Image 1 (cartoon, rainbow over the protein chains, first blue to last red):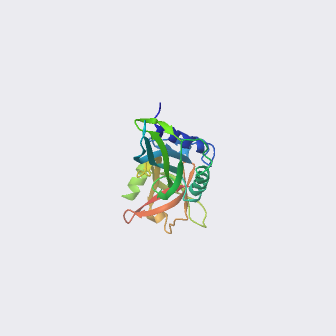
Image 2: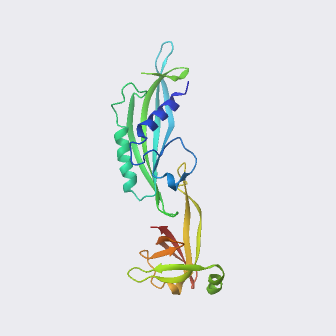
Image 3: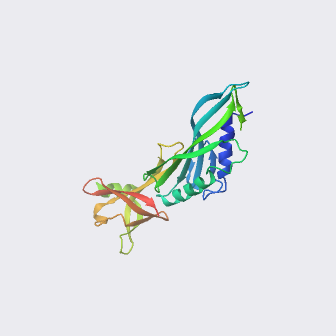
Length: 145
Length: 94
């Protein structure tokens, strides 16, 4: 059984693949450098996670609140990155998650950086979401709805 | 000195000043690997094209000017005077 972080990251990737101007160039926790031929691209990462016990029982229920970092890359000075960000925000909006693992998802920050040192100006737009999901204590792969 | 370097290392490059006709001059072109957005993870593998030319060949150089080198068109991104005779030009692909 996978850790819930793995499951949720894969869920976000599937929500975004072929649903934005980045098309199929959506990566799951990519750490290798991006190639120009892969751009525009989206990289999905799960960041720091706060955890607390919210209910006793056998097993107890843990509330988990990680950040999800959705990084959008392109050789672009703004508009193309923001067009992809618009599509990402629509795809990851609260509601409509049905029986999926997430209890809540909230956009909490947007940041952009640019670098003009290469053959074209390149930019990265980061959307930071706060997620909430629950697991059974001692069984981080068991997601509780 | 600039002429010696250009003779040894230079190649023909087509320079088009904004609003003017193209002219062929000699430039020393380099296009080494450059990792963009290193602050992020991952970065983007790119190159950093640039050309060094005699300053007298580009007397009114501006960021609206173009270079065609090895079949690729570049726009001037930055002008970096090296010494009285040579100018290094940072290029971006068009």
